[in-house]
Image (cartoon, rainbow, N blue to C red; front, top):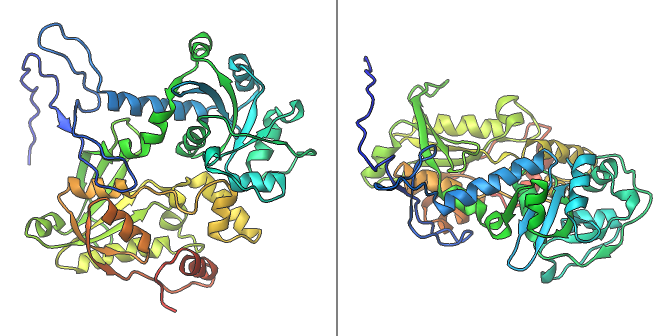
Length: 425
């Protein structure tokens, strides 16, 4: 088939078609009103003066995405609250220059923010925390610890311990929760150098500032802004009829993929429920064939089952490596597992929760392809509850387990005993 390209007709005052962000019924996210925004890469303009306007939700996503990038490169970021500001830098990436910029922006001595489990390891004692601590523990940083190597040693349980003194615990400052959340969005260790600051410091030092509320709202906002950006037929081994659809959020972040096997859209239009699997990407298992997990067999097994099912299926390939902690942190977790921790405690030792994934991403993608009733391929009750909370009707759970391989036996046992996965005895 020959495709002839033509320039589209330009209609004055209509640069790009408006599209609405879908409403979320997900219990993990705040309800979002329908709104219009221009597609990524387009500029909104009125018909008279071509006044440039940016959808505030898109602006919020962009600001947080930029803050994530700055944090990853070791540059401080200023978080803004209703009555205060906090300048923060990632303990994992900040260097001498970043510490100098943070010091110049600070109104008081810097402290270290850690997730409670990581703080307990640093302090070598249990760390009870109250609601007002906002899920973060603050430690005083004497001058000897305010150095890049020392900070990395405090942040990373796999790093060589260089600390000769135990930091003193302090009250967590306002906006600490948003600081920890920003580090997690950056897939960095949730450990930050922080100090009170003013918004004026952002302009004076050319530092990015972002409202703390936008950081906390980012996961829901990014998920509900996902839109189809590309698709193609891609025949796969044992799955000749497959199509891949790429989804991207309005901030231009990393893409998620939907692999359609057969014609699940037709099944959905006719009132049926195709097979669906929400599969978090696993570089080590899916691509390298790692024996530490069962991700590779689950991926290939799901595609094969969908190919054999007359209703077809949808495999959502989600960019949520390591249950949402990212590949680098997953490798750190493997190091901790080799030292005796299981997969749940290893994630917690890094400062992360047992499962950091966002099922609103999967629900938004399913709605975009017209699938809202599913037969879910999973052993994980949390996936069923998560999708149901986001408005996806799960008609049945289809068991999807594979035998241990001699290496992942303990991993599978932990999934059953501590995560509640439904696995054969």
